[in-house]
Image (cartoon, rainbow, N blue to C red; front, side, top):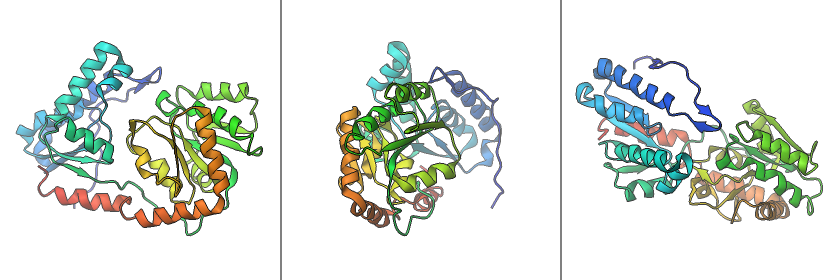
Amino acid sequence: MCPASVVAVGPRLELYVGGRRRIGPPLVFGLGVLRHLLRHGRRYDVVHTDSFPYFSLLAAAAARPVGRFGLVVDWFELWTREYWREYLGGVGGRIGWSVQGLCLRVRQRAFSFSRLIERRLQAQGIRAEVVLVEGLFEGPAAAEPEPAEPFVVFAGRHIPEKRAPAVVPAVAQARKAIPELGARIYGDGPEWGKVRESITAHGLEGVVEAPGFVAGDVVDAALGRALCLVLPSRREGYGLVVLEALSKGTPAVLVRGEDNAAVEFIAEGKNGFVASGGDPAALASAIITVNRSGLELRRSTLSWFATNATRLALDTSLARVSETYTSPE
């Protein structure tokens, strides 16, 4: 087996401006991938790439006649035409939709990590068989759930789609039934300021914490003791943090949405709840229900995870993917 190596194909660039992804870095990266594969493509039997940021996938497809490698593509997300328009506006949205469509027409072996994206890929006519692999979790599960402490956890990038600020008023409402309830909102991003403003507006300083990015073991420990994970995101291509919570016996509260694949991990009433919307009342109601369910729900959550652990394990997905390398298309 050849040793692993990292090859830089472009300069370090800022990926975001004002919370939005910049177009420059994906273009530069795509050109770098194209240049590298045109020069060195015959070194590779298989090129395995993520679909996003698209230009690198198109670059690999363009270089394949020279490199003669197989092409394997991971599809974590597939945006709708409406979301492209919302994200980039009329003109930019049409361009993004068109570029995504070009990627679907590339001959490839395609992997999807959720049933939602699998269905979308098939509906939009991808030029490939779509193989569903659901396992990205790596690590041991708890033997027993820890007793719940009266706080909820959010962990993720603070971007509009994840709706981190919604956790604060939800906790404020839930405190009417659970007076000792608090929250720890981990992560950073363009909406971190809104989170802090909401904490002040609701008078929850010292009750709701928003420390920004913290070490992984801090989040890990908090997830094990939390009453529940609260992830009001309306768009998730997978939702690994949900599995991290469930593996500890900590239930999850998510929000139903047409772009939210993470709800596929929730067995209603067995390992958490899916709120009908991201409004404070709906989230608070779900949090209160988790609290009333007590230790029984935590044990049920861990039991659900144990039953599904093999399906959701990274090793399971890696074994399935590696099988395709001998015939990647």
